[in-house]
Image (cartoon, rainbow, N blue to C red; front, top):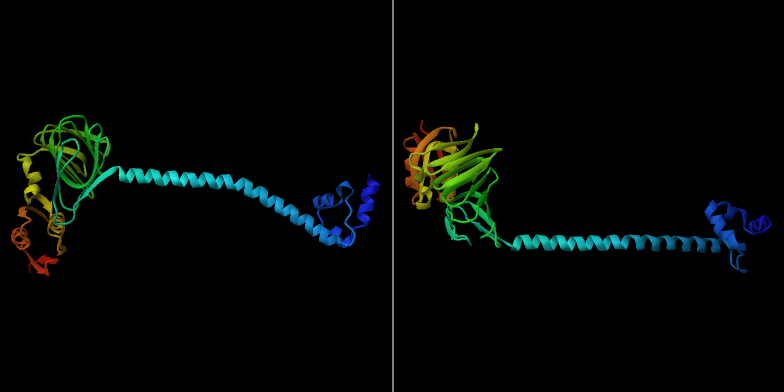
Length: 294
């Protein structure tokens, strides 16, 4: 056995054989291999190594292909699921200076304030009454199964009632006109009944009784009531109701108690600005500059 290997090694040029690693030497000399006559040994060596590389490539492709197939199937399923979620939902959005009335599949009547969005599942809404709200809405909830309103600031659970829900930015306020409502926010809960509201404040979720709870939903008739409210918040409502841009060059934290209508911009500005000793300028009905009087 050793003699045969020695004989084979002697027939291989020392330079070519020396460049091989141990595995390549075994492949070249195993089984009494002898190069065909008239063909250079280095060419044969190159052919053997090339076949070896092609074999490795085929093995790698065989291993990778199933993974690619699985990934492709997963992507198709993911896209299909996303499409199902999108097309199985209803969405209502209001723009600036726009209010919308609608009736949900269970018979609940809704009025959506300006710059608000409501989303709910098409089916089966009547058995699982859950919706998402960003903005402000008044709801006359049809009696039946539990009704849940989800917002980024907190959740509202009701059985059958009339209520107003406001959730904008960091504001969260729920007013109960009729029935009973459970409000949850920041790991706290409040049960409110007719004539009460729950509000998220610096002290957490608090509730209080309001003498005339209906004023919190007067916006449905185009009337906006603010009590001890920062001017910055009042002017933000102006922007939503009149679709204008307001530049207020004053103290946004000044408090005001005021009611205004969204029928006429100039009249509404008069109602707010005159008592607060502010002056205003309307430009092209799209921009309002407000500042304090000298």
